[in-house]
Amino acid sequence: MTQTPFPDDFLWGCATAAYQIEGSPLADGAGASIWQRFSHDPRLMAAKGDTGDVACDHYNRMADDVALMKELGLQAYRFSVAWGRVLPEGTGRVNQAGLGFYERLVDTLLANDIEPLCTLYHWDMPVALDDRGGWLNRDSADWFADYGRVLFDRLDGRVKKWVTLNEPWVVTDGGYLHGALAPGHRNMFEAPIASHNLMRAHGAAVKAYRETGKHEIGLVVNLEPKYAASDSPEDQAAQRRAEAYMNRQYLEPAIHGRYPPELKEIFGEAWPDWPAEDFALIQQPIDFIGVNYYTRNVTRADDSWPLNAGPVPQTQATHTTTGWEVFPQGLTDVLLWVKENYGDLPLYITENGAAFYDPPNAEGGRVDDPLRVDYLRKHIAAIGSAIEQGADVRGYMLWSFLDNLEWSLGYSKRFGIVHVNFETQARTPKNSARLYSQVIATNAATL
Ligand SMILES: OC[C@@H]1[C@@H](O)[C@H](O)[C@@H](O)c2[nH]c(CCc3ccccc3)c[n+]21
Image (cartoon, rainbow, N blue to C red):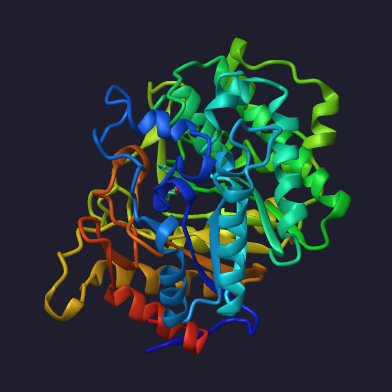
């Protein structure tokens, strides 16, 4: 048994997102989000009938859920705010009842010695703004900054770690290129525009935070390390395109004020000439980078659209129920890649976890999830290895605290370390929750 001690102030927590756990999406004056619209549309939703109307009913069960977080020993909790609860029309009128829910959540967390990490945007834009063009409208940067100011004014100080966007790549690739996620567009010309406006909005919100904010704000990106399938020039070029498209497209402008050249190659005539002043806005200095890691990709040249690059199935490996290869080394590799390419900004693992087929509630209220226990042990050890090699990793937010709505895949993909019986809303910690409690108590990875 090898123990890898973590830094003394390493922050151990869990992550969730508003639309995936809260339910009551229209309660107390809230304005509908694009996910309310998308999940109710059987033409768009893969898991037809699975909506966020109830989810984990966290909106009504928040105090009990925070008590369970405390019981498990969580030191932090990463959540997102549903924009439409706070600003039902997306801009203008503030819905005090909606803002009040998040104020109660933050105060309850603090009363339980759990540090709140607040994500402003985890994919649920108000429909009122989507109807005005959403992320395709350059005004979205101002809408988002104004929304941020409402939260900063009310919660900064109690919230000391802010995140502007969760995974702009997924918002763009899923919502505007392939259409698998809200708002369900499939348009190669729209995707770069949405992507660019998301980053302008990120910059505008960071700039707004610096007007009054006294703590930290960062950006969360999903990173999937790309390993060329061979040394052939074709596979090497495919790896560069895939890495640029997913892993560099957002960090390059945020940190270096530029886009990777491969994006013009990928999008061709669909890649606009961006106004130079946009990059000064996007490149606002941030205090940390949040890394969401789940798996890797072995990449080869192929005729897939739009990258002409695709995965080589790793048939010999363990896979999750979402089809992702379990590859802990990729987490070590990608943390060192961030350090090498983007400098020594503090890093947080803002998401890491896995969906496996968990047994139903066994007798005595236990859920045995050995594959998730093994996944977490190995990925937490992988972080320890990156830290030993010089990565400045400050915390780990496990995805996820509860089984929840896995977007268009519905409730069948269970990522929680706490099982949710969606008929009764009963919460049952899985064995992985017990493992995580031990990791937190010892501040060490044990393999
Ligand atoms: O899929 C598990 C989680 C989601 O539930 C989170 O809301 C989201 O932040 C998130 N991102 C990723 C990695 C990127 C990705 C998202 C969706 C589909 C494929 C890859 C995995 N997850």
